[in-house]
Amino acid sequence: MNLQQLRYVRETVRRNLNLTDAARALHTSQPGVSKQIREFEEELGVDIFERHGRRFVALTPPGRELIGIIDRILLEVDNLRRVGENYAAGDSGRLTIATTHTQARYVLPRVIASFRERYPKVRLSLQQGNPSAVARWVLSGEADIGIATESLDHLEDLIALPAYTWTHSVVVRPDHALANSGALTLQAIAEYPIITYSKEFTGRSHIDEAFAAQGLAPDIVLTAIDSDVIKTYVELGLGIGIIASVAFDPERDRQLKCFEAEQLFPINTTRVAIRRGAYLRDFTIAFIESFAPDLTRERVIEAIGSNRTADAE
Image 1: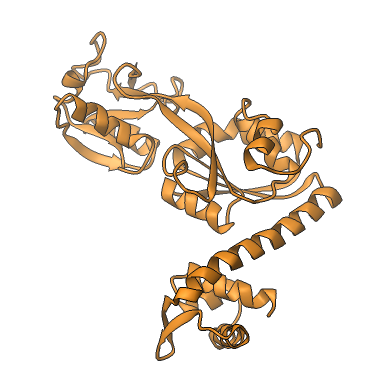
Image 2: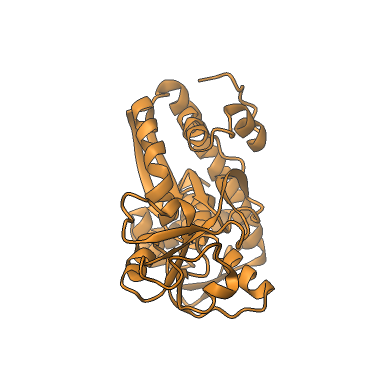
């Protein structure tokens, strides 16, 4: 057996057993993937995949056990490479961050600017998606770290560290009936059309929970994954907006009036996720510390259970 065969099996599972997609991702041919997997199965003496003709349709019982072992082996191979790179070229490399639009647009710019000054030879890549995609990219190794508010703290193979807490705000046009209100209430907000985040984004579950707790059924007329989109439609008069507080910029959003709503909706926690067992290069830990100063090098190393020393840099 060889590492190439292990990678072929793993990629086939990642691509929902589609050999064509797996071959494309691996930059090889579909017959080549199929042949390597068959030779691997023959060496093991068991089938990894159930087949219907030439198609893979499911993992076999031994296949389900083997895929976990294959993942661990390939993770440790990646760790070996990262250790070598960390000591041979500690200040250069690539860092891939999976995150949501709100984090990428409103929180990360200052962090990335500071990081780039410190590590100019590190090439950064931002992958944006919903929180479930963020978790999936970190688990698969396609991203080094994930940053999101939802979906990161309940997966066994992820270590999710709390980075910071935040609240929601309500935004309205200056000519809206609520613009001159004092302290807003959920009852007052529920009387108007609402524009806010899609179900899986940016603390939306806390918004729904707050209304439900008071027996209110808000009229949510439009949802989006992008805070800027929400504010645009509020400016057009389609409704009032509920957004993350960090997404309101007094300079850029002069056409809107903002009300802090921390008394109305529960506090949200944004987390940094790391794949359990992954070796983090020094600049990855430095990026985490820059993003969330409370997550010091010592805390991160302790959390991931690494045998690295905390004073290396």
